[in-house]
Length: 470
Ligand code: FAD
Ligand code: NAD
Image (cartoon, rainbow, N blue to C red; front, top):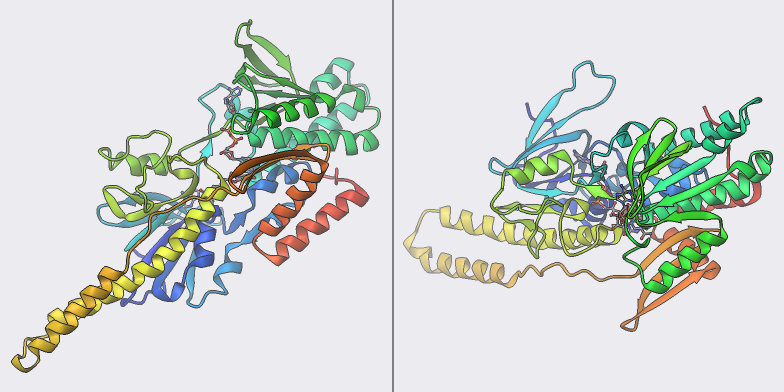
């Protein structure tokens, strides 16, 4: 059975899958009076991912970086149906989406299928594990809010266990060795945040443990942050060295065991390194539902990284499906900046598409009226006018405008690469950190989140990070 929704048969149904950067940006800009709008996402909130590593170490509270999707939809001109469920299948031929309620309150997960006229596919990606043994079971990811909370619990477990009377020196050293895998921006920011906690809080809350602390970042490539300029890579490596964060480049993690990681340097022997915590930030891969959707259009979908789209973000072979953000394989990096610009672009396009659809409906009704000799010329004239109006509506291809890259590297320092007057301007340090904070504060979607994040920063500054846990 289909869900009971306030569907107006005179309007087309727009189904949006996801409530992340792409979907939320679309929802913000969308004129909902034009469509029956349905949002389906397993999370009933938007997560501001750039501040996720700050949640993992307790600088920020989890709720500060979440915005309930209904905060956006309740202000829309026409009601939007928000359904907390996981889409499990998309049928691009019959134009339907099947979704399941994963609530633990249901003994059997109910499944529904809904038809769509247009589908915006914005389900993001999932963490790439490359099938490396032990990663899924023992490492902490850094993608969802639950990952940050899980990491915090594990991290505090390591500290409290190390603080237990009688713990051997060797065990303390192992428990307090934190390993971050992946030298992309997520891994670098995570290592920076962990460093801040260890230096600013652990040192004062658990002074006896501080000498045992070690932080290592492992990267398979010859250097970290491959998407940043050479100067900023060098600056980050220098800052990490000063902060005593060890960087092992050219080293692959081959496995995560209980209490250790297996490292394989490019030209060296594989070795086992004891550690208490492994944070896995080794990149993204397509979700199962995305792979399933792509496999239904094998002629067009030939890139394993994600969905191929045309210049209007439509899926070739299924032009009613628009795909945006991390689930796509385009020439752009999988970033929030790209996803949100794509969402905003689609909101503008859907306004034009609605206008075109209205004219098309009028034309169809006109053609359906019976011919009456007295009015044939008039009807013909009106049809011509409608066709002309339709022709005038031109969809413009999506164009990305890069606003620059920013990353926090710990010790109140950040790096920035900003395009200014057509030139790439790079900077790193404390002033850049203040810029990073103000940039993210202003990018946060709501005043409520801005107030919560600013309040958390003040709390951390004056009282330190919270080390209590359940
Ligand atoms: P997401 O934001 O991941 O949203 C996907 C949505 O789909 C989610 O709401 C999810 O719940 C939902 N979903 C999942 N499965 C289903 C399903 N089966 N059915 C329906 N819905 C589903 N980028 C930057 O530009 N700047 C940064 O500073 C930055 N920092 C980052 C820090 C971290 C720690 C991480 C992990 C990423 C960061 N990124 C940053 C990258 C950025 O978060 C992603 O590029 C962005 O989230 C992509 O947006 P999206 O809408 O495609 O996917
Ligand atoms: P990424 O793909 O950028 O980096 C992952 C890194 O892990 C790669 O450098 C890879 O070589 C390494 N790696 C993979 N397997 C490994 C292994 N077994 N052993 C050792 N190293 C291994 O992933 P990310 O950092 O999560 O970033 C994902 C996307 O999100 C990127 O587009 C990034 O730009 C964006 N992002 C941006 C920011 C920011 O702008 N501040 C922050 C976070 C993420």
